[in-house]
Length: 314
Image (cartoon, rainbow, N blue to C red; front, side, top):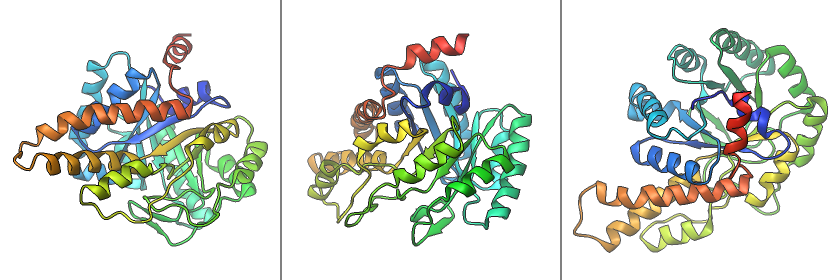
């Protein structure tokens, strides 16, 4: 069942966060849906601008509608991750997406508001919802590059939401994109979340760049010939604390890539005679499903599917 993120957030707010997972291909899609159904969790499928060009947007869109048919117990949103205005408008008109993210965070505040408002108006006219972003996460995501964190200012967040009418807001609180997130004593700025929640009570907030970069995955990749040095991520034990402060959506992409890399490096190391792409794929799908199910436990979304379905029927 494809629903909007707004419908999921109404159930999650203050209690748990919904996992938002990026996918690019068939194997990720199958593992993602299996893992969420196995753990009885509602979830968000994220399709980025890069994924749409890698697999072709129509291929990904048809995979979503097909997955909706073959996993009838799944409850999920189909979400554009880090879209520019042109991509948002294309997704709004596609008839597949239930949610889009407009990322104009690299523009000055008023320009960000102007662009976001146009996307919000177009999306709301079609019954879709919109995530926007204020502040910058360190790292690279699609076409947005930031050398340093630009933390979200709570007073600007309040003004921005009221001016744009967006349905959720991605905040910069110290997370970052990629596999090299934290150095020294850097911590998540929960004080920023708390102040935004005070100013915007009940309003859904989003954490981007929230992969935990499991060290066992990194170690196994390196043992199988990889060279990932000094990788670090978000402490997953902080997810529920963030959820209590209004975070209803937590984005996880890098961790899934690490699972993919680990499975394939180990498979071809252990089976150098193999060349059929389906062989490692058969290993990856259940491994990715297991990873997703475990992540949902940390988010607090595991086991919530029944109550979400019941609420959606009312």
